[in-house]
Image (tube, rainbow, N blue to C red; front, side):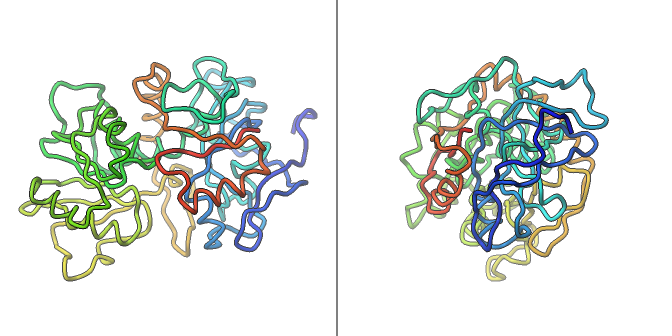
Length: 375
């Protein structure tokens, strides 16, 4: 490790079932194909507090997935034509992982995989305000909000549903409507934008709070149903009986069952959710042979199997390849403002603010936005 890079750092780690700010945590080492970045901003995700609360990660492991920062060291086999020391980048890692517990986003340094890293087209700066409205990426804070949710959206579209990475094709790629349940989530918003720009479906049907309707329609939603309505499923199915692709971005058992009920009545359909449910978990009273439930786990982008919650998810080289291709596909559109980051609320106290930030996500204070801590 370079003499200018310390051997220890400040970081947020799992202690008991809580995130805790600590000092003297070892700076992560660099595996093949990784580079070390000095972190400038980090974003919180529900998976972060869940890794702590449900003790999915080892004790003492560094928490956090999303980070932006400056490259300070290249690891073995990093192509210097692609990345160099001094580059401004934003990326994600599997924080609190069993495979590499010392490497998480919520530290002063994090080792990131070049295959899943975005490179800024121009130097990034710190935001000067405490909030940033949805828009074109330009700061450490708004770029930190992008990696995990955007790559998950890309993997959903292009790996699981086999859509084409084609910008604004004349005809819809699938001649049926799609359902996005949880359109205002940090995953739902990029999904809707990408679906619109790649002309993925004949219509984009979204379930979210009505307070987000204007923004979601600007992103590309054709119709927004309010999940607060007790008859929301009946509203959807009475109007659309041919929804063959359904995305549950909330992904709790209740919402996955609700989404399942919206599937096409006279053709096969697939529900994609982001936890560990399968078709066998659907109540047998509504379960159908022609409607399946699948999952995706963006951590499988790595070159190793992922152990999580007592389950083992196999490494998939195709998944990795598609995510890497997607980053190159979407990067220019982010910088041009054709795809926008979500609304952002900034916590100014550095890593020490991360435990409070994660608590705010756990209690739902991130509605329609992403919470970011600046270092």
